[in-house]
Length: 446
Image (cartoon, rainbow, N blue to C red; front, top):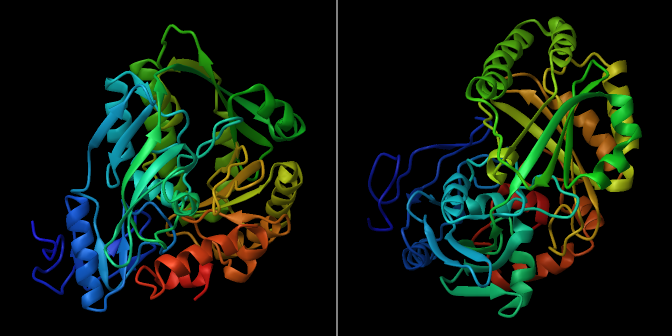
């Protein structure tokens, strides 16, 4: 396919159909949409856009809630820039085309007896979309997917192809692992992998006061700890994932379906729909839902433990705070819900990450706690998110780059010590702002 062909549009050069994100809260109508199958085709598409004066953005699967990928110029789609390009067992790495879905990457690695060390809780995103926006899971010692990158290939504004690693173009590597699409379009990534291992997941209910009272202990004692607090209640569900010698003992077919599909998706979907129609019912539903939780334990390969299906659509805001601020911020959030008229049907998700060395990583330079608030799609969320955001920013919170927030470059420069380093790199690689859009102007400035 030529780089000027259109996918999902009305056909022909210079036209393109609308693009929407997963949550449905962002729509864009690009002038042109292309799906290159190689780095060479990608570079040619970017050069053609420059000739025609079009801005350029690359889209993944649209799992960001922000308009990070939105453009009225050239939209790069990932469908054909996929596949595993090489596995180096001696080096412990896998090289993958940027548009490869994480699900495909995980399944292929497993077939070769390999695994990522850590990952987020869904795997529908593309590898480059996930890393470019800072997708993360939870971990005491292991960090985000971007922190597992050992090399990358970047197509810049003039169509040049840069290979970047700690040894080659190291200053671009320092920013490009999490670049928001501001430095160019990533065409290929090399990630650290290790021999596949087993994780034992232990899930159990725990009162909010106990979780927060033992938070430091629970984080320190477990390789991967997270919990969900149900607003309007004092109830939480905790999850502890730790490496295991086995044997594998995955959830039973029926019990797993009941927990992951019926309760987490089917019944929850109905409960959210009822709550949207009758908000006054939400606190009662939350109490019933949180009390219905039961403990379970299972052992499986990593991606089957880290990830789970998410079929109920929502909007989300997540902030990264200094780890030491976790308990105070969570207490303030609980007090906010209790004193307000907000009716919150979605649990609040709490995870952690160690400090890393990536300029715009939400965990850059500090041990981090993540606090995520959600609202069912179609439910007014602005007041709740705004009030929660004020709590987070009081603790020098850093918003997740792919989730809703109102922060601007002036604020972000104050909470990212290496912000100026990244914007200087952007000035060097994209002085004409070929890869700019409204969102990047908001968060990085002009």
